[in-house]
Image 1 (spheres, rainbow, N blue to C red):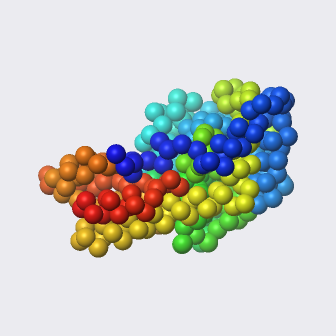
Image 2: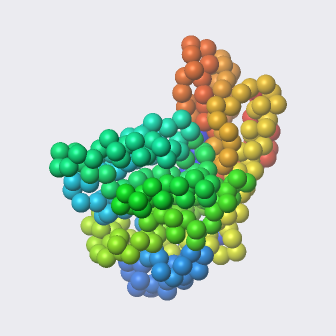
Length: 337
């Protein structure tokens, strides 16, 4: 069974595993106060700015929960695209902290500036409505689309004019940064967003994400939020070691670039066989439209996600590639169409 279902069922990159092993037989200070984590933070800071604060946590939902709950007061709300991960696949984690999510319609997973302004304007009736205070987006989006500099600049401008924090879910930031259409780097993202996180789990880590805080307002007492939510890993060096490996010799971008290349080959192969795509392939996700009979036949050899039904005869599937995907896997899928 060849995996195209997701980019986290895979294991870790060999260099990441070697980094974990290298700190296994040592004794170091706990809770991320070790020299390995310090080196990892400095590697990331060198690509952004020494003015950012960085925290390593084990998972994406945990990162989203800590960042949003830590930034908002009880009466404040989040504006997010309707297909945003916090809306669809996090079991109401944000709502469980007492914060309303204001959902905005989106065709491609991106947050449209006009839709953002409309959502803000329709939710300002103090003190009778939850106060919009934070805007959530992901890069790449749930549909694999990538934000350009001009798009992010526009959202950032709207947020600053309305006193809103801008947060980026970076679960697939590796793929976004390595996308051919990307024109942003980490330093520019940190200037435009108040906080974001760098996804390691889907980019070669065994587990782990790096929270980046660039807005000084969000930094005080953030470590208390990390601890209170159960995210302060006692053996923190195993998180630091992974990010040191990912951000040494450009491994983080290389892994994203390989995943994107495999997705582009899949995309070209699918269309060459006469099958349309639901969305443009910009990162490591491909969305073919196939007959239900064809999908059933493919399931014998490949694992993938059923994305949506078109009608009684056709459906959209999602194919996700990773740093472990081989061109032989792609060729086998295309040959099976």
